[in-house]
Image 1 (cartoon, rainbow, N blue to C red):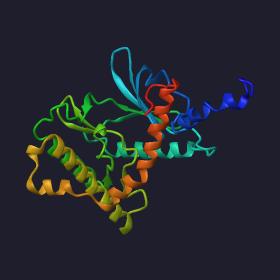
Image 2 (image 1 turned 135 degrees about the vertical axis):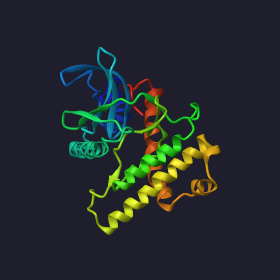
Image 3 (image 1 turned 90 degrees about the horizontal axis):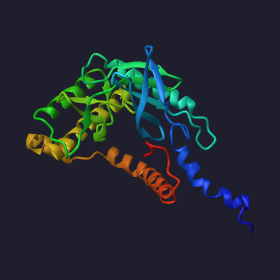
Image 4 (image 1 turned 120 degrees about the horizontal axis):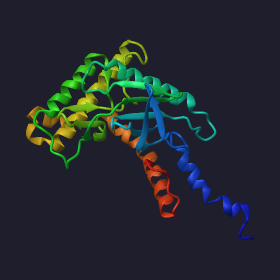
Length: 267
């Protein structure tokens, strides 16, 4: 068989195509420049590019930073997915705007294209065992979540410490409302209320896990017991999604090992 046989040339690209199909924008990257209220902002860093969205930090000439998030536009397995990107973007913007009066939530500043929006940049860092957490931080975080809950909403993503920011002001800030849920989703009926109530309990459960890891000295005996519990739905979620993330991680690992590195921000 000839060395330039088309079948041989095509094979190495298949893992690459599969990997790009799992990126929200496919082979495309975030725009290098965006304009907001007549001001130009340039891309500083792509911080995340997964199946559902790509997120980047931008800054203007004065050093003011903003965050751009573009939800999925890439087809998947031949199936158009732009509709899902539009839906996810509209939902997330709705959650942000629902909480715009809270100082711990960044404000939406504008939209970009069919699935993108820009929000304020929060100076700070994600929760980490390498950074000291000030006294009372978790009490403030619990109060913030309880305010969301009073508004008929569940954050849903408190298990990810990177979505909980320790601001330079010492306060907790929440970002990324992509999978949040509220009573507007399926109507204010008993079944949706039951589901929202479960999600709200999960919000606080995961906060207690972070608190046990980072500030165990502030845990009350009751919170210590709550932090040890794990609901059946949480175990089911991990069982269902773990194979997907394992496949995704191995695919990207193979691409790096063969030298076909993906653009910055691929996770």
